[in-house]
Image (cartoon, rainbow, N blue to C red):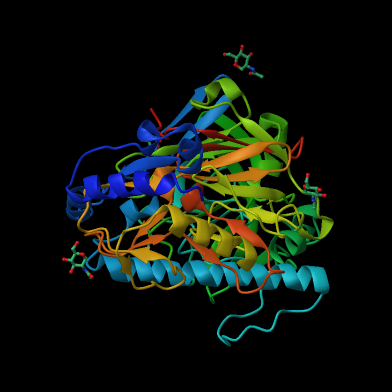
Length: 488
Ligand SMILES: *[C@@H]1O[C@H](CO)[C@@H](O)[C@H](O)[C@H]1NC(C)=O
Ligand SMILES: *[C@@H]1O[C@H](CO)[C@@H](O)[C@H](O)[C@H]1NC(C)=O
Ligand SMILES: *[C@@H]1O[C@H](CO)[C@@H](O)[C@H](O)[C@H]1NC(C)=O
Ligand SMILES: *[C@@H]1O[C@H](CO)[C@@H](O)[C@H](O)[C@H]1NC(C)=O
């Protein structure tokens, strides 16, 4: 840190303490400190949060929109927060969200360890079974598709493969907003026979073999999620309509026995890499390409999930930078990347863990998890640049927290992740802090450390907000560009 930085920091702080409006540090800076202290201002919209909570008492939105453009299907995407019941205690809900997020991450780690070493990881919490899959509570971005003539709002999840809906007649179903899928009114519904190739794909896609039903011998599936949630039912085919593009004989799970807190949605859309995922099943139409732009949770904005790879559909404000997906035959249902570096406020961080193994990118994990050596470098540099703000107690997995209730606006160091081949993910200013308290009295750096250096890092959806993230499974590349997410 060059000494010239001190006065700059000091000036900024005293101005902010007087509740001054936007101040960009780069505007004052010398060439040196501009590079050192790249910052972006964030308005602490405390009032907007209160309005948000009131409007949440009357959740209305379902049947998110679709459109077709330049050979691509664009599906409107929203946060499930809008589908939930009124939120009485926001902090409790946020705490719960982080607990579920942690369960999801641990379940990933044990699945990965199990796959690589052939041995389940010893986990301390006995209630977390060693099964494949993920916890659904936190898979929180939804889209609406049409299956067998019925609108179905589904969670979009790149961390799993089988698409499923709750199905009639239901043995045990959780509450959902839309009517249950009813196979008997669909002309095109067919059950999948056991022993078929789709049935045999279940083992790889879900970690569980298809089971032969008796009379008729249909293929029964089971997906167990890390926290005890599950879906069980019949593997089936029906016509799927994505926008106005039909997908015939789409294989999905007709779930007759489902448990979990799914926020009232009808099921899940699997966007992983195995044969059964929606991406693989529609590869003739969309070339194995999709992308999304995840909107900020607490804004009225909606983002988009785009199937097909015509870049002219995107509204990115920076050029797309690409990296290649890391090939790991044992983990081939996941999207893995090679994280080669990171910078805070333009300062490149050092860690022996960069360029080493792989990091997983996931639409369903909320908070990014980094190997301890990288996390500690990020934290140290962030604290060095974000100085003078009162600290607040840690919250759940988040250990770097501040009390910003006395500020209307703060300047936050920019955060960038670098990937093999000069690809960059610039974290949006809305993706850096997690607001534990709506009055900003507890605001935490939205990143967490993994327990062990050899665990696999995960780039969570919080840090992907307001970016176009482009998956090309045909060419095994992944692209990033800044984009203000909106469907319209
Ligand atoms: C299904 O969704 C489409 C658009 O997303 C909407 O126009 C249509 O009315 C919906 N149908 C039903 C039965 O809700
Ligand atoms: C992509 O969009 C451009 C611009 O509209 C169009 O010229 C091109 O044909 C499209 N490509 C495909 C593969 O649809
Ligand atoms: C990651 O990238 C670095 C730097 O380009 C390279 O040396 C390393 O071999 C790559 N690692 C993997 C697992 O691809
Ligand atoms: C946060 O800071 C404000 C002053 O800026 C103070 O009044 C308040 O008590 C602090 N809250 C907590 C929880 O420390």
